[in-house]
Length: 512
Ligand code: XMP
Image (cartoon, rainbow, N blue to C red; front, side, top):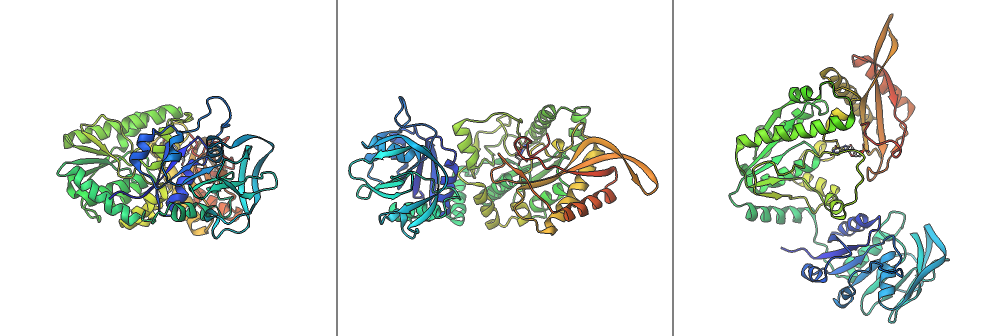
C-alpha cells in the first residue's frame, strides 16, 4: 500500500527536519528532498502537497536556487515557509527585496483575513521570524492574510490555486500555533486522511519485508541500542528464524547491559530469531592496551568490532541480506552531505560491505527516532530498552580518559550505575543524556585514618534536543552530594567526584 504523502523541498533551511517531524505528528507521511529534485521524480512520487522550506539565500540574486517552477503546474497545494514563501512570490511574479529592518525572534502576527491555513488560530498569534528579505509585492491572484509591525506580508495566499506562503516558521516550537497551521495545511488543504500510524507502518513493513526477503537469510548486527533492536524485531516478525542476530559484546557496555540484551533477544527471550552473543571483551582490551589517544581508541574499537563481526558472519556463511538500523535523520543528513568531523563516530548498527551478502535492508529508514521508539513499544520491546539514551558505539572506551583497563571499566560501570539509579529516583526532568566517566587523574584523599591516592569520577548530565548543542543540567546540589557520597563509599578506586558544567560547544557531550 502506498501512503498518501507530502513532499518537502529543502532549500537548506536549518529547520527542515522539524517540518517533517510536524507533518508526521499529523499522521501524514512526508519525505524531505533537495530543491533540485527533478520534476519527473516529483510526479512519480505523486504527493498530495508540497512544502518549500526556508533557506539561507536571497531569491533575487544571480543563480538563486528556486526549484523547478513546473511544481506550480502540478495542480496540488503548495506551502512556502520563509525563503520558500519568497520563492513563491518571486517565481509567480511578485517582488522580494531586502527589508528595512530584519525581523528575528518571537513576533506578534495579526491574522487579517480568514484563511483555511489559520483555521482555529487566534487572530493575534505569536510566531517565530527570522528574515532580512521580505515580500514587497504579492503576485497576481494572491491576497495578504496576515502581517506584523515590520512585515506587511507575513503571509499571503492564492486560495483558488491553493498556494500559501508564510514568512514565519510554523514548524518551530516558538510559533505558538504553528502545529495547527501545518496540520491545517496537510489535513484540510491537502486533504490527507492522516493514516500514517506506527501500527500501520508495522503492518505494511512486515508485509513488504516478507515479500522482499522470501526464503532468503538475513544477518543483523545487534548492539542493544534502540535502532538495531527495533530493526531486528521488525525483521524477526517478518522472517522469523531466517534472521540471525549477532551481538558483539565488546566489554565496554554499561553495567549488566550485555545480559539485558541477551535476556530480551536470547533463547529465553520473547522473539523467534537466532541470537549469537560474542563475548569479545578480552580481545578489545588487548587491542586497546597502551592506547591513550581518543581518535586512535575510536578507530581501534571500530575496526575490531568489524573484524569480530566478520569472523562470526563467516561462520554463518553467505547471507542474502544485511540488516541496518539506519533512521530517517541519517538519510536526510547524508543526503545533504554536510558534516564536519569532530570525532569519528562509529555506529555499531552501521556496517560496510565486508560481509558476504547481496543486499542491504534498512527497515527503519523512513522513521524518526521517536517513531522508532513507538514501533519498538508496539512490538513489545521492554520500555527500558526502547527509551534508552544514546550510547556511543565505542561505549565506555571513550568514557575512560587514557588507557582502558579491566579495572577502569569496572570502576566506571559501577559509578555510572549508581549515578543513573539515583538520578532516575530523583525525578530530575529534561535530561537528554547522563553518564559517569573516569578521568585519568588521581589525587590524594583521606578515608578512615588512611591516605588514598585514587581516581576522580566525572559526572555529566546534559539537556539537549538534537545533541548538536547541549547545556549542562543544573542538578540540585543535594542530589549530587548524595551521588558523590555513594560513589566514593561504594566504588573502590575512587576518592573524588566532579561535576562537568560545560555546555556544548565548547565541550562535547562525551569526553573523548
Ligand atoms: P558528542 O560527544 O560528539 O556526542 O557531543 C553527541 C552524541 O553522539 C553520541 N556519540 C556517538 N554515537 N557512535 C555513536 O553512535 C559514536 O561513536 C559516538 N560518539 C558520540 C554521544 O553519546 C551523544 O549522544
